[in-house]
Structures are given as structure tokens and as C-alpha cells.
Image (cartoon, rainbow, N blue to C red):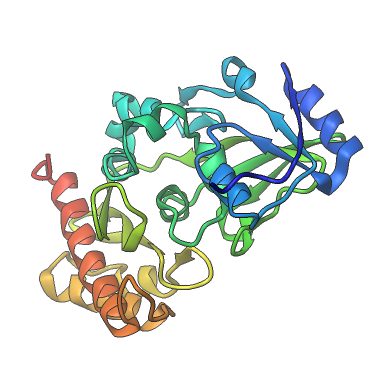
Length: 292
């Protein structure tokens, strides 16, 4: 039986209390919410902490989905199940419901959180790809107040984020833009598994041509990757299969997968191309009212 190394457990009732504890304990402490990624790593002794700070009581403070005219704000303690079931979120960003349907199983979705997914910073993590695709911004709170970090700067490497030792991710913000839609495609070895490769796409049309587009890939390198050059290649062009293929080629060439037991690097690059094409096709169909 694999068991974690000994640790002390504390439960907090406010964000302020959690920050004070983190400041006092430093890098010997780790926050835990759902724990479905952290606890297995501790059992394998891949992660060892002297203190675990349970923040589940912060759901009332940080578990929310707020729709505003120009953005949607989601609290870091919002559960996967709440993201899956939110009709307002699915209407603005269908990519969320696409992704949540293929994340783990109901047990995990009932406990896991948006903030936990992002702070785990696993290169294969689904919601990191979703947030990268949507151009999200992360609100990080510490003793000196709040700061806002774009997703491009939030993940600094595998399992490493911009959140400091005495800080906590409190909210993720998503800009709302007109005449756009999104989609998520994933290949996995079995239902609910980590991605072999996944692709998120967001696209906006104006006058029948592409005004902007974003692609985010997961499981194709050391970080969840936003693909540069996609917007420039598609902007001003009418949607077509040829255009989708061009975007797929850019995604294939930009990613850097490795060969492992999930598949060869060549196979993963093929998936990056194909899933980008599929997600683009579905996003445009949704804008045109055809992608239910």
C-alpha cells in the first residue's frame, strides 16, 4: 500500500486565513480542494508537504459563475459539475461543456475545481487548454492585494504556476466577444482518461470571414500550448475546409510531443492537426446555428 509521508492538516474558513497560513508556512504547505491529483502524487511520494491546508469551506466565497456584459467571472472553487451544468456558461463558451463531458468521472467532477485544475499545471490537463483558448486571465490574491495574470504567463512549466508561496488563485475571467463560438476535441485511451492529445478552438466571424481565432493544445509538450500564428493565418478568410487544414498544419508544426505509452510523437502531431480541424469546423458551425 502506498501512503503519503506524515503531514499536518488544517482547515480554513476564509481566503484571508488561507493566505496568512501560507505566508507563515511557506513552501512546506500546499492547498487542497478536490485533491484528486495532489493526493495520488503524495501517495507515490512525488510530492511531499509538511502541511495540507483544506480550502473546501471556501466554496461559498469562491464557488460562482457570474455573467457580465463583457466577461464571465468564475471563482476558483467552482466545481467541475457546476461548470458542466451551467447553461449560461455553455451558451457563451460551448467549449466548457465539451471539455467537462470528457473530464474524469462524476466522482471527480463533484469534487474537483477549476482552480485546482489550473494550479496543478499538468501539461495534459483539459481546463488549462480551455482557458488558454479563451484568452482567460487569472486573479491571484496575496497579502499585498490582487494581481491579474494572463493565461499565457500563468503556467511557467510543468506543475509550476505564477502563484507564489503566500498567494491563492481566486478567480478566472473570460472576455466575451460577439459573433464567436468554441469547441473542444479530445482523444483519450479510455473514457475520462488524461488526453493523448486535445485541442480547443475559439473563432469569431465578421461579415462572413474570420475576424480572429485561437487554438490551445494539451499533452503535446511541457506546457499547455497556445498556438501562435493561427489568427494571422485565418484572419480575413472565409471559413472552408482548406482554411481548417491550414490551421491544422500550423498546429501540427508548432507542437512538440514526445513518444510515450500513449502514442508516438508522430501520432500525436497527427492528432493535433486533425483535432484542430474538427474543433474549428464545429466552432464555425455553432456560429451559424448548426453545431448543437
